[in-house]
Amino acid sequence: MLIRRETPADRAAIHAVHSAAFRREEGAVPVEAPLVDELRAEGDLISALSLVAVRDGEVAGHVCCSRARLGDDPAAAVGLGPLGVLPAHQAHGVGSALMHAVLGAADALGHGLVVLLGEPAYYSRFGFAAASALSITAPDPKWGRYFQARTLTAYRPVQAGAFAYAPAFSRI
Image 1 (tube, rainbow, N blue to C red):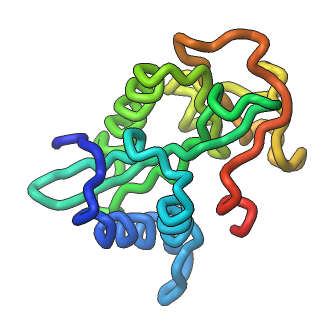
Image 2 (spheres, helix red, strand yellow):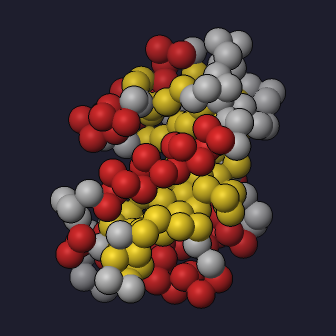
């Protein structure tokens, strides 16, 4: 498996990955697929943090981070998501490899935090914990423990406050 940055040639495959990974009913396009397209079109997708996993010459998974705001700081944190893996490649380490790669890349770029909305049982293995423990407020209080954050090397305790995802997230 190879983890690399997405290229323009990967866009249709990335859309297909999220469509398949998050499909809840046949024929319906899950919100995660157009979300990535919108983030990219609006300039909020961070290209260095949009990674694909390639297995046997096929894009098997994708993860991305987008611009976000934490309090008054537009650079301290990034929003992670979606993370999607084709069903045939799930439970084979693709998602874990993507997570480790994107966290390492976000750290290397100097971000202090990565924030996401997801299942604590899954994301805790990557060092995520309830964002509220770091004094980070969710856009929606009902998210509770599913709103999580992971500190990186550049994290400072003053990086706290209300978190806001890129505008495309508010439309899903």
